[in-house]
Length: 101
Image (cartoon, rainbow, N blue to C red):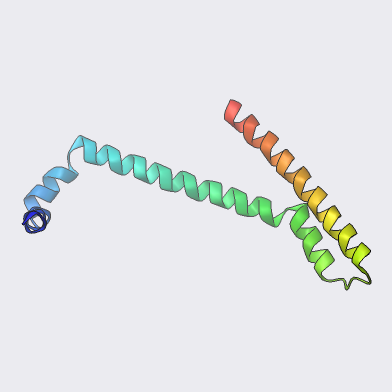
């Protein structure tokens, strides 16, 4: 019963136009558009940062080499881990700097 009534209200063109012109609905649409735009910008910035990442470059470089023994694998993984940790620390500092502004 409730779904039928809701369906009738949604299909009422005059009611939908009246709601679309109301301030709360317009404001909700503005907030939604802002959130989507902000998320896209953050996603683009993050993808650029990942592509420029030293860790990614290092992983690609290390993946192309064939290790001769287990010690060499361990050394490579340690270098990649250290680079990753440094980039996370740098990103954390940069992010906290943005928040303070």
